[in-house]
Length: 234
Image 1 (cartoon, rainbow, N blue to C red):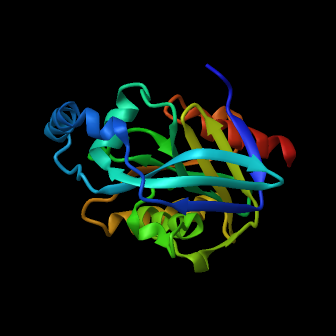
Image 2: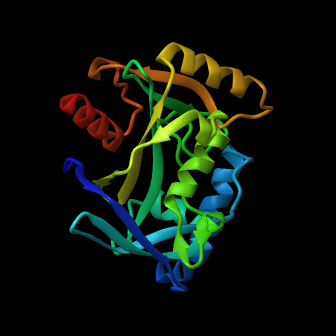
């Protein structure tokens, strides 16, 4: 497997356009059957509208791409069937919460989610709520996902300016470091308290990564590659 490539950029230029996706149209019956099977295993899955990318370009410290709307069922089928259309990618924002004592805070996805058991930074596939004036607002998406998954708001952290775009196969994770003014154990306790107040939280556990020996097999390679680079530069 090819190692992830990390591009550090200062700006994101992600236009949303009305583009038809041949994969979703031509394999509609198969996609519907696949999603129905997944819903039998995880009844909480919802076939909402999401955004996927194409034509990614990294140049002069900038990342540009075009996004289009599709349904979550088509996205899941594309992912689960080994990315049969290589012209598109899954491009999403991630908030890398870093505590005052240098630990990264990661969440373990709950059983009812489509990524159950996986451990990574708060994130989510962009959707129509993330569109502003025809552009995909990844910074806004990160703030929303952090709040939904951890209960933390933009007042709880200071966002760094740059983005670390980790390219891994057909995924591009746009990661922004968010610095918390509290140590790791306190941050974990606060997030766990927030989760305890929810009837059905997206996260089932909170993990602190202080060094590479804390990596677990359920942490995606693109996430551990980013953290390893951060540790190497400190």
